Structure formats: C-alpha cells, structure tokens
Length: 353
Image (cartoon, rainbow, N blue to C red; front, side, top):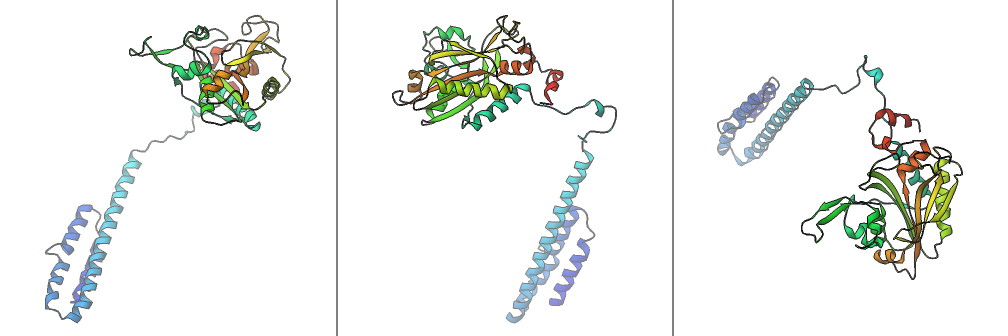
C-alpha cells in the first residue's frame, strides 16, 4: 500500500506540471481526492491493515493529501495572477511624457503667490512661538458675530455684507453663514486653550462685495492672537514690525491710527506706504498713498469672556492681516482679481520665488 501511495504522489506531481487551466486543475484534484479518487480508494483499504501498518500508511496518506491540496491551490493562484497581469498589460495607459513636439511646450507647476506668502508668514510666526490653527468655512452666528462682541443690533454687522444660508425655521430666515473673517478661529482657539498662548489662523473668507482693483468677495486673511499676563500695545507693535520686515526684507514705512473694531479696545489701523506707486497714489491705494493692511488692537474683555478667559487676570492683542493685499504689495500686483483669475500665465511668474 505504501508503494501505491508513492506511485500516486509521483503521478500527481508529473501531471500537474503540464496543466495550465483552472478547470483542468480542479478535475485533477477530483481525480485524486474525490470520493472515487485514487487516494480515496487506497484509504478504503486501511480497514484491512494491522494497527502497526495504519500508523505508517495513515500519516503518509495525509501528507500526500495535503501536498495535492497545496499544489492545486498554488497553481490556481498563479494562474489567476497571470490572467490579471495579462489584462493589465492589454489595457495599460502610458501616462509618461513622450518625446515629441508636445513635450517642449509643457512646464512644471508652481505655487500660487498667496501660498508662498502664507507659508512665509507661518514660518515667521512659528519661529516666534506661535501655533498655526484652522477652522470651518461655514460658521454660525455665535462664532462669527456674538462671541466677537457683535450682537444682533450692532452696526458692525452692516460693515460685513454676509452670505447667509436660508433657514425657514429661524425667526429672521437666516441660518448658518460663510465666515466673514478668520476671527472665528480665534474664538475656537481661546475655548480650546488656557493662557498663556499665541497663535495665527490663515484662511479664506467671504463677503458680498463689489469687486474692483483692491476688493474681492472671496479673499484670504490671517488672524493672530496672543493672550497672557501684562500684554501691552508695545508687544503688538513689535510683532507687527517684525512680520513686515521679514516679509518685505526691508523696513517699510507704516502708520498707526485709531480704528473701530468691536472685538478690540483700543483698536488701530496699521497702514503701509503703497509699494505699487511708492506712496504717490494709484488705484490700489485709492490715490491716498497708503494701503490699509493690518487692523489690530487689544482684545476686548467681552471677547475674552466668550472664550472662557478671565479678563481680570489675562489680556492680549489680536490682529487681522489681508493676505491678498500683502501679496500685491510684495510682488507689485496692481489688481487683486489676478489672484483668483486661474490664469496660468500669471501664476507661472512666481515659480522662481
């Protein structure tokens, strides 16, 4: 019987090598392991063997059974992989650049100038110990207005023409909104931290405004906040001057004048001398020679309270920077609409920066 088992093993090993179809392999498996298969017929004779013979024949038969099952499985798996690879090769698409008349006109991509400026500013503030935060574009009234000391009847709401989502269940029909400033991230940042802390928050904002050389209804800001003990206006001025010097790589003429913003008290407008016209007057600076760039001030106590911070113990400063206008000043762009034009000829100019 052992001789018969060895013949079966040799016969199977020889025949499986010649098969290249799954159906043939399954038939071969049935021929050897089926109820009427060769190995099954041999095993039926075990009842006529002595206990000593069974101890030898049984393990040998099981080993051959395992061999057949394993070899059949491996062979079928290899055939399936060959079929898949064949189909992949037949349907392959060459996405590589071919040499020819088209390749010479293609050029590599580059970063948008706004992205370049944002990354540069982030690096400056990270070097000064600030975090970089992000927040949602779609906000609620609380984060966009209420928590920033702008109640429902506050005139400052008229200064920000807001894109509202219709909500029939609301008393005034207004639901959520597209954030009008990145100050919303300041509110979330205060709630998630304990003083002292400092962070910036770059992002896209939306206002229903008429577009012109210096205004867009979709634009980008960068908010910043520093909260701790004994923070002063001097701290604010230091960080703002440091930022502008690092961005423009030179000392920029600035002026600080009083400004009204509900979320700061006192509030200031930090203007820079227009770098497009060198302060002589143009469409960007509206012929004034100055560009409003950086509204700032000391955080209003009501805003600190809304952020879960005790104004009797802590204070701080906040600022908002127009990224698009900063890009225009740095690169001498005379129309903000170029930034959102999607014109690759415009973007390509900044690949060397």
